[in-house]
Amino acid sequence: MSEAEETERAALEKMSKIWVGQGFQVFIQPSGKLLPDFLQRYRPDALLLKEDDKVLVEVVRKGQPHAEARVRRLKELIADQSEWRLEVVYSGENVLAVRRVALESILETLGSAEDLLTKEPRASLLLFWASLEATARISFRTRQADHNRRGASLSFWQVVVKLPRPKPRAFVN
Image (cartoon, rainbow, N blue to C red):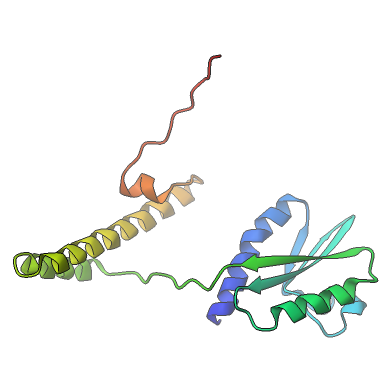
């Protein structure tokens, strides 16, 4: 799967939760059997169906060539279809994931930073900082996965800085 397809799929999966919450049946990359005749050979990115609402979904990425023309074409196709509407999902730029770093690599970088401390303190600081960030990312992924299994959410700063969760307070007027 290409990076562009992954970005589109991630946007659809994120939105699917919202659509399901609104009572829709969600069909990502719907098959020809689900598509109405007026779409001819066009396949939308998703199809949303519920009793009183039918929606075609098109995902548009920043910098995607011909996106405007595709949306315009879809608008033309549904112009005479009163029971259908179009929803355009705008996804951000393709964001490259930060690759995982092995703990051994972090320890090696810390050793290099220590060696540079007296000769090149600025370079040493950058290596220490990069090691700290890599360690924090590993810690965050591990703790986030644990919290996800328990159905809880956790912010990056609660893991890295170990911020306590705020306690609910009663406000007295």
